[in-house]
Structures are given as structure tokens and as C-alpha cells.
Image (cartoon, rainbow, N blue to C red):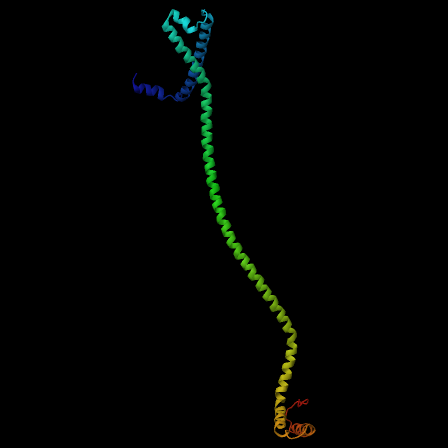
Length: 230
């Protein structure tokens, strides 16, 4: 049979993979069945074989055939290996799965540690920015409190000055009137300084209030009615 025929017959079969999987399962079943048969044969031989006192099965077989005794030792070792293999194989499979899980867990742990490290670095950066912003905020609050205090003082000052505004307005009106009357008052004051020096107080009073003030009024010069010498 040529390779082309083999490829067409086997590789072209759509059931090849399921058949191979089933074949593996069947081989395992056959292997276990053969091992069970071999174990039964071994047990039967051990039961039927007549041993001398202190003699082993290998020695008893060796009395008839040394080759068979060697073959017995090999078959016995093979059966022991098979029994050990039956116990070890599930443990190996479990160890393999646990190793895979361990490697997966270690990879996830490493990824988690890396993520935690990035988050810690980000947290440190944010805490540094927060500290800066808090310092700026505290400075702004302090400046705001200072400006509020100044504003309150300015408001108090403005409110206090508002009560004085009326009085200042009245004083300004008086000053305007006094400014007009300053002409007669200056004239009276300069006359006093120029001419009243040699005279006593009663005569000075008569000169100013009985003579000069009346003369100023007659001439209609503006002057204060309550002009005083002191």
C-alpha cells in the first residue's frame, strides 16, 4: 500500500481523531485487564507452588529452571512497578495541575504586587499634590480672613464716618459763612493791634464794640456778631 493510499484512507478520515482518542482509552483498558490477569496468575502460582521450609518462590522455581526464576523476578518487579505506577500517576497528574495553579497564582500575585506598587506610587504623588494644595488653601484662607477683618474695620470706619458727615456738612456751611465775614473780623483785629495797645481794657472795649463795630455795620461790611478779643 502506497503512502498516497494510506493518507487517503486514514488521514482523510474525519473520524481519525476520535478513533485515536478512543484507541488510547481502549489500550488503557486492555493494559489494566492484562495486568489483572497477570496478577491473578501470579497469585495462583504462589498458592499452588509447594515450598520447602525456609525456601522462597524464586528459589523453588530455580530448582526447576534458573531461566524461569530470573523471568519470575523480572515479572514480579514489573508488577511491583506497575502497582507503584498506578499510585504515582494520579499523584503526578495532581502535582502537575497544582504546579500549573501555583505558577498561575504566582503570576497573578506578581501582577497584583506590580499593580499595588503602581497604586502606592500614584497615592504618594496624590498625597504630595494634596499637601501642596492644602498649603495653598490654608494660605488663601488666612489671606481671606485677613481681608475680611480689614473689610469689617473699613465698614465700621465708613459707618462711623457716616454719622460725622452731617456734622461736617454743618461745619462747612459755618466755615463758608465765616469766610465771608472774615473781612470785617480781620479789619477789627488789625485795628485792635494797631491802635488799642496804649489803652486799658474798658477803653478798648468801647473803641471796638461801640465805635468800630458800629461803623462796620453802617458800611455793611460782613463781620461776626459774636466777635471777641480773647
